[in-house]
Amino acid sequence: MKNLKPIIFKAHSELKTVLPSIKKSHLYEAFAAFCGFKSYAAFQVASNVNVKDLELANIQCFERMEGFSFDAMESLQVCQRIQQVWEQFNSISLKDIYTFYAGASFEEALSATRMLNVLTSQINENDSKAILVGLVIAAQILAEYEENPDNRSGEYWYSKKLANHSLNGLQSEVAEQYQQIAPYRKLLTLLLEKLENSHDAVLPRPSSLKSVSEQFGENHKYCWSGYFSDEPYAVIESITYALDFHDKDEPVIPFSVFLDWIKAEMLVSPSRDKLLEIIQAVKDDEEKWFWHFIGLQHDINITQNSYRLINAYTGNEWDEDGPAVPEGDCGIAFPVISDDIKLKLENAAQKLTS
Image (cartoon, rainbow, N blue to C red; front, side, top):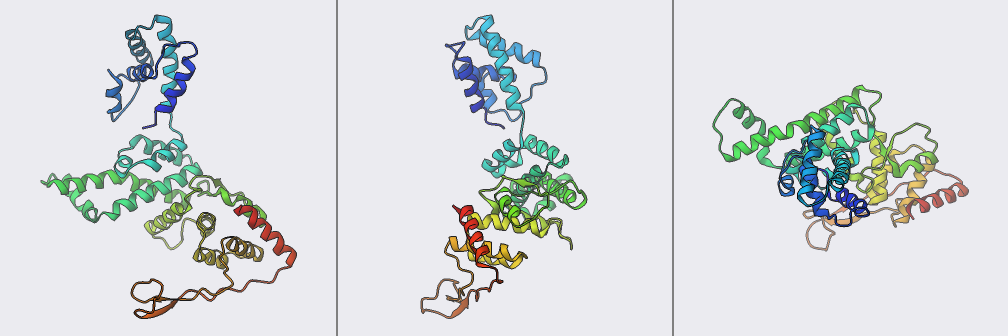
């Protein structure tokens, strides 16, 4: 459910200029009445909020305000503003969906039917940003579900439940959760089918790389998104999960998209392994140097070897105790480009990381 607090606070600050005696508590109660509840406390514990008759909703709100000793004109002003509050509260944007799932527990996510329905509707309209958000949400929820070993028998106990077999508490819980997770499995299937069969459905690339793409002459009309810009690894993991879920010879998500999210992760959380993967994957010589300079900004020199000894049993750095094995790489050599171009690329890398 959308957070009502900021909407009420804004309405209160506006109404207070014409109704100095109005309190936020009055507006919470007025909103609850508008939605058909006898009190705001009853509204807070409700699992479903729906207003079908606006005329009736306004009457309920009006009567609640009169009960607080506001006159007819004042009550009418409040009702008019509360209807606007309802319209804001009732509308769900992609940002609302993203924010909700970012803070929701696993159980809250499973019960968020309306959020899921709105997201699915946006995906069906081939909204590329909704496709990205939906991919991450579905993959994360399914992955978390599969982490619980009890859920491995979910399909079995759900079939027993459908056949009216008697189940114990744990079996019933596992069967119920299998049923609850089904819409997210359906969502991921829908997403993958769209990415496979529709020319209009595309997975966006991270907007943090837009300037890099333009710099190296990629004239494609890519779709960009700022969602998950602070956590690109969530997208990387979700793409990996989705491709494994799809299990087809031809991946429905192009490697170039996957690589761009790895590049975004390199900017957020730089590491030698990511840098090595990027430089080995990109084809443009100048872009290879550009990412080398990105690495140098973080004291990662990919031209030098990184060999070290580690404990064969623990994987920790060898402390002269136990068997030792080498780990690392021998570094890579870069193609020859002019010093002027190197300087230009170094400046671009500094600008991007500053």
